[in-house]
Image (tube, rainbow, N blue to C red; front, side):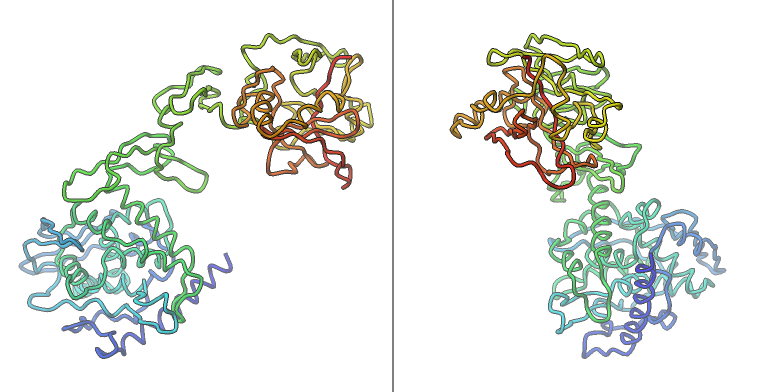
Length: 552
């Protein structure tokens, strides 16, 4: 917060210095507006509330006054809504467009601003050809852009009695409504630099062929309306390459830019993309809503037309995202009964499983998300055993003529100092899939009549050639563990999990099938290889692993 506060102070200071420089620019250096002089009541070096983060409420509070002009053409300006509509004779606009930039045309009106037969000041007042910073060639100061676009409306409002700050905020709200920025400001705090950046891209400076900014300022100052066609044509003409330059690490000497300028400008453009595709705002009320991107106009490119999207709501950010294969297959199916399953059309031999209102795909690692009983092979006839020490029951299976536990043991005795000090539950998955033991405590984990696996019990897994291992080892893993081609053919239902440190935290980024051997070694299994690890982590109390037991 201290950084942001200082940043805004510095940004304001540099903005004012640059504004004063602009006021002294001449046509020779490209700073002077072309063919006209701005109204004297609009000066770029005036202070502006836009030099800090903006919200709709702040702008409305500053511009809520109503001004009435007594003349043959009475004007009332009200900013009680986020769109801050300028009321008088409302003008409808029929948008026409070129192949490069949007334009508007409509009937003229003198009720908003007196501009008749006066050329509109434009393009070059906000551009700096900075030879010291080549990446910022043609970079526009965002604060200047907003002031330039609103200058004639502001001048008219000042003449009608509003003070400059109120006039500027009123004009801003109307400007923001053109590109649906006002809808974002109702829920999102946007930095003013990002707004100016987005507007600079949506309303580019004039060039030899198109007078895009001139025509916009003229239409906006006359109170013309900008329809769907205009807004979305402007969005389609934005070059992503032009936007990315605002995310550079080094900025022009006079202008501070940061990631917020880039990210918030992207947010503004993303919101306009949503509007053009007739998608509602993605928020908690629309979470998981499924919609198809649609464009009612045949003149727009609308490259995403017909694509399906879903509203994805996160902790800090919500957005319309393209449906994954899983979302496509499950969005219209209700998950109301746990353990309901249906096959996937997109993933051969895989299925979806319902749990607590959500669908899970069998090919992904669902350890920590689904209960232990979901990981067993329904086609295997398991046996069972009861641990006489605590009465817990475990599934068993015959593998290679021996009776194995088909799950990790979960035994703990608080009165046994070894187990009490050297066994833990994982901080991530608890003891829901068995307890974790260090090498010493593992020796006491199995009940009487059961023992830790010997090296020779798993030796063949480690000696297989690669081609054989990639086919055989996936048969050891339970489905829902994320291992490639996991089938659990033998019913051992080995889980792909992590070993943990003496504090219960995962030690590896990659999960494996782990368990202790009676040689004080442990085996690590993946879907392509298996290896017996002979060296136990010497740090503190070493790593903690699950335990599987074999019947004597």
